[in-house]
Image (cartoon, rainbow, N blue to C red; front, side, top):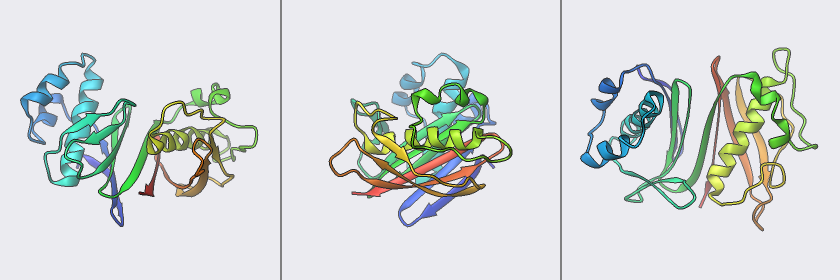
Length: 211
């Protein structure tokens, strides 16, 4: 089964696809138009082609429809016919999609790795305190990084500073759960519930805000 994880809350649904198929196999999993063939040819790296195909196979599986993905000037994906809000993420061997017909959504998937410890100055605020989980802070750091990527996607604005504009409130890491965050980029200063799950290979975060 290509879908590794899947969940729905009210009108919001998301899923993670484990990319185990070949390019030829993925092409058979959704209707493939000439326009999409032209878009695919823009990618030369084999892993990027597989990610591109997996996202569209996952979208087709979730929606039951052949929906066209376009991108706005900020690089944010959107469904051409306006039937859903969408957010997309991928990491080594996995793709993730979240959909909602009436809520702005964001999703991010990050491969487990220690590099996140070396770049904390790019995303971690002095008032953010990563917790210890399984003997170190890596899982918590990954969740901080991933959550800010998720909020950035949900905000759909340019010039978002991960330190200045986004704050994660303290939380204890578990295998899955919810923690709170706030953005200072807009006058509204929206607060977010960040849902998360840990997998042996990655962390997943997602959120939504009603329009």
